[in-house]
Image (tube, rainbow, N blue to C red; front, side, top):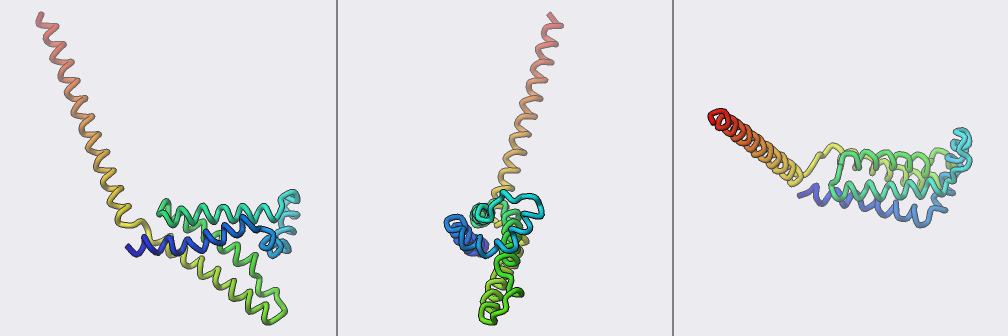
Length: 172
């Protein structure tokens, strides 16, 4: 029961942040541009715009957060979110570069918030599936086993019928 509540609550921040990044990427792009643009240039990707990367990051955050909230591949979704939140922490909040103490404190707070989210999604990644999911999976497996047994029984019947038909033909 707690997992059913915890995952959507954890995912809510990623959905909110992702939507904001997608709809208003300019502010966030300006914040990460000093780090991203030299790296893009070094990789020979000058045509890639930082704004577009921010939008992609936002869309990926929303998609992964939705998967986590709905318990669809929660481990994969959580690990993806951990990677995105780590990148956000390192690129968007480099507190170590700030010289103004007030600004440095603000960036440190945001950096630690993002690290906390990384910890949260890593915990979610280790939590596994809910009992309801496990029960559904077991029921599906049992049903498949039952179907296979029925198919095998029908095959056996068909072989027996062919054998009986063959022996009647030989007797005549």
